[in-house]
Length: 448
Ligand SMILES: NC(=O)c1ccc[n+]([C@@H]2O[C@H](COP(=O)([O-])OP(=O)(O)OC[C@H]3O[C@@H](n4cnc5c(N)ncnc54)[C@H](O)[C@@H]3O)[C@@H](O)[C@H]2O)c1
Image 1 (cartoon, protein in one colour):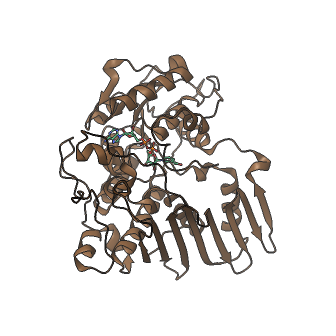
Image 2 (cartoon, protein in one colour):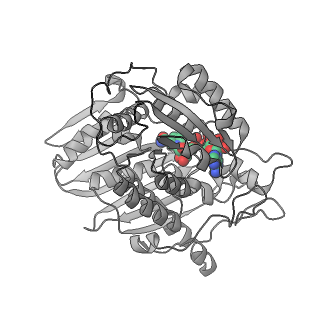
Image 3 (cartoon, rainbow, N blue to C red):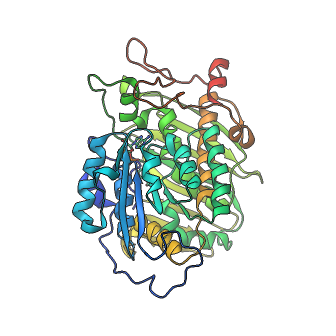
């Protein structure tokens, strides 16, 4: 049901990946007729919602496709990317799929590190789907410009980034903006049904929880001759912490988000260990290949989390909770099973749900058209911070508290964004990047 959190290697606008997350339902314009808008999110006299896409890779193209497949009049009017070929490829696919709904002439195709500002200015709703290291400045800009947002997860990769998003969230609420965040499980029937039961006490009080994103590592983009260091790291962004947050933040965040949803809150402490068990090559960058974190919630409940990027081991992408009256296993091979006196189960393959990637856009656009509140950024921030706190624990080897993590001054970003700017982590003479050493005071300072 949920696609791997990385677009397939080689083509950020891979046609198969694009179609996999696409609903073909193009519903006619019907919702807006006759409705009175107290506060329109788009230009008076025109019910068209204008969309700008920032980050035209696999997920951004998929999200634009889903936005363009929502009911009512929608138009993609601007696109921005740092790589012109990504933008052109995405545009060609979207034009092919949506015809006149895609109206992005040359003068509304923006390339470069500040391209987002120009694209955001032209839209009613912006899709933010670059690597997450840029998300805080993109969210901040969209909110400052008063635009509705669909932001892919994670919404930040470090403490300074999350604080920027928290500030932007406050302002977005004051401005009455609608913000969706790409945790599509919140729009998937099986999860919604499971949560209803759990929150109604179907398994009693939660005693412990577990969650996993154990699998192989996703795509790698080997260095090309002539690339600057910045270009290479952006090209191979999954393997650099300032861009992706490490895979505990980039992928495992989905499972951490689900357990926070079960618990209706965030953990207050993290105890972790991790490292790189597989022999490393330069394209493995600076991230660990496994993390194991024990999280503690305010009432003392523990949650055990693992994520692994090593092939030929046991795999699972799932969440589990044990209660005083029963237990639940979620998404284990597409099955959701609650056992105990209130037994219940559901299988994705039996009820063939509409893609939650489509439903999350249907819901967001419907809220905009019907002037309903819609705000997913609060749990977007909490789930992102949960993952960052876990990474701080595995990198440092220390017990990390929520407050310590939120207030961390460690800023992973380079000083400036340009093709000749220097990222903080550079390769040694063998092309290898240093990995954090848990317990080493020099590293502890660099990672928490
Ligand atoms: N919700 C999900 O299930 C899901 C699935 C896949 C990806 N994602 C998320 O979507 C985001 C993008 O992932 P992807 O797989 O599409 O990656 P991708 O590499 O295919 O696409 C990223 C695009 O952003 C562009 N880009 C990079 N820096 C930029 C900048 N500063 N300004 C403008 N464009 C920039 C890249 O050139 C590329 O075209 C990530 O945050 C990822 O976690 C979510």
